[in-house]
Length: 100
Image (cartoon, rainbow, N blue to C red; front, top):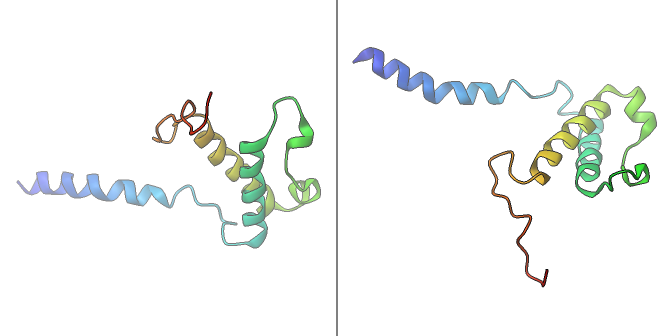
């Protein structure tokens, strides 16, 4: 019985421990947050084939590690959400309030 309790306890704790593994070392920096915001905006508003619709401070992207890491994280996170539920969210692409 003690082994079963240990397995149960580990099954509860391991997912919580994994949450901190993907956190960037730059996550608390303002430029990371600005990059994350720009990356997320780009992922959700980009028009394929039109680079002018990408929101990114190119100078900061090339020269600031915090902004660069934030932009990439924001783009990835929001692109996954926009792709129809890859993060466990339901696909709502066909839903809306107006005529289609």
